[in-house]
Image 1 (cartoon, rainbow, N blue to C red):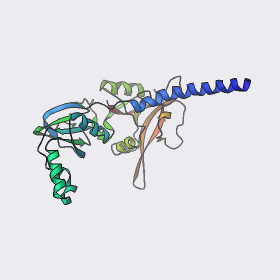
Image 2 (cartoon, rainbow, N blue to C red; image 1 turned 120 degrees about the horizontal axis):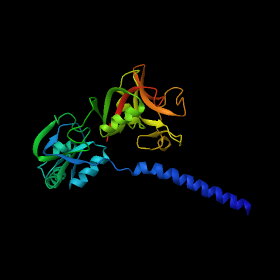
Image 3 (cartoon, one colour; image 1 turned 30 degrees about the horizontal axis):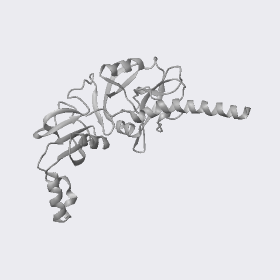
Image 4 (cartoon, rainbow, N blue to C red; image 1 turned 180 degrees about the horizontal axis):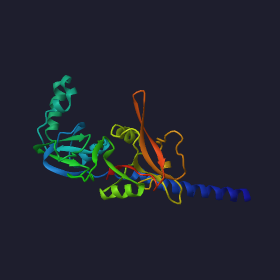
Length: 275
């Protein structure tokens, strides 16, 4: 009987711990993507198209763009589509299939998922009365004097040359309606690597500075909820601190990695994620 009671207590305890862990980690998967907002009527962006699809309505286009991790999209309203230009593989198909798809396409809308949104003064927008341009980002983004870069499938980032400590870096990004960059992702790290300088660290949103003694990103999400790690050699060197990205290169390979710094004593450049 005592064994059964002990086993039950252990089982319940583990269940509670797992549930608590799941509540924090599962919320990451449930987090909604930033919503696409109508940015311009009567125009389409000439940014790189990563995929396109004939859709029935705007909602279907938004779902399609999100599935392709597009940061923006063009929505063509009831336009007269040239099916061959939209789907080149149809050139060698039979006339019956081509005619059917041409008839179907004429009744629907064209959705163009874009790799990156308009950044600088909407310079690549083209006037076209049949289109509407939607983006996760507004027309104007305050860079705080820094450089805005687009990392496909990840988002817009701001590279600032302000030399700040970690607390100041957090406040700097917040004033720009952003946060210290979330980098617990291989695609983000590799995408950012080409914009970063060698041996110059940039603060990102990963730190360990509270009573929980766990590494968390700017959204309060524990590192243990993610599989990806990019610790440099002999890192993590301390159980507490904040993280900056550095770049190493060897044999023509550029590799970004994480290094721990003191929370308040060290100054570094800043890398913000535009929310």
